[in-house]
Length: 88
Image (cartoon, rainbow, N blue to C red; front, side):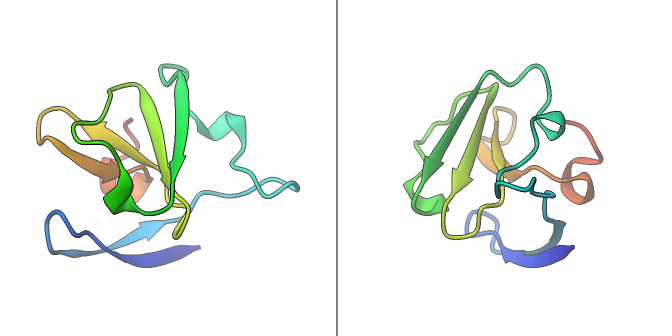
């Protein structure tokens, strides 16, 4: 399943794959890379801290699309195989 997402940081629309949820409505731990040690939820993407923290997963509760902080671009990147090439 995928969803079109408007990235307010770049101004671009992106078609990203949504993570699969388990029976409790949560993202399966198998989908979270081992090098991530913390997950934080915020009401929206705009509520994420700036700067973010590497090795942390951020969830905006309005879209539930996981993001990571990219220290190279100083921006949040959605976590999906479509946008990260499968790399976290």
